[in-house]
Image 1 (cartoon, rainbow, N blue to C red):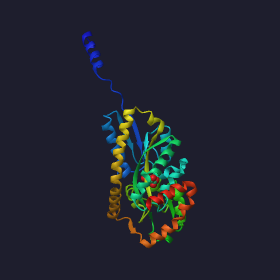
Image 2 (image 1 turned 30 degrees about the horizontal axis):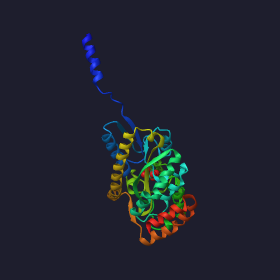
Image 3 (image 1 turned 90 degrees about the vertical axis):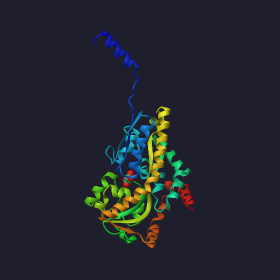
Image 4 (image 1 turned 60 degrees about the vertical axis):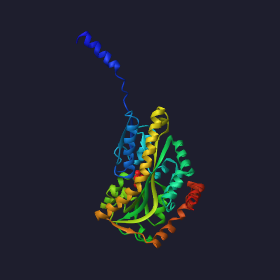
Length: 326
Ligand code: LMR
């Protein structure tokens, strides 16, 4: 190569702005992409990459591909993954038992009350508790209200007797199932389909989007629209890692997440409605509407769980939620 050409190459290389490698954010979750959480994670990716003009790349890993729900919080604590949205029921095993507030059966009569609690001082207080575990809670995401399913019709309280019901790892959910006469079986989300298929458990509880997207309608012949409890999420990051990001990147990512959260809250209810329509159209699971009197019997049977957990969750949090409903 001539000296002239060499010089030209060196000069043109110097003229190029140095391209820093993009910052990678791994966002791991346990549900299907076609769910409120799955879609919002992809929305966040899209917004974050555009708004940071390529300085950040978000890699979304759905369906427990990277970590199952027991492992993912540990992975976040050691920065092996940078973002998660575990359900509120997954924080109890970390010692943050106050989060089991959201598991209490029939605590929230509707989404408005739930959002008043979540977005008000109670929700804020719970987010602050995450800091003691090195986590930062950036947003609450919705899924929706859960329904019971099994391989026999669940029309009334007595139908639950003796059923082995899969639950998330929450002592409130265990107490709820025992109150109904069922046996609770805590289990990771990735194991549920197989456990239902093999008959390791007889039934479970889910919002419609999780039920349909995990194909549980292939292994559960009956679904009762009980709306007895809520399933939602906190988007969490590693506190130290997040605070260590350059200010401009961090603030832009937080704005992208704010927009993704608005989107998530808008789609959750409709996604669940569509999932239920698909369950009905597929015709493998019979869908039952719980008669009002039976719903009231279930509610009465489960209500003592609220009082039993006052010392664990905090009387003020539970009573504050009642006031939000009044
Ligand atoms: C479950 O384990 O049932 C849920 O937490 C899964 C999820 O993330 O929606």
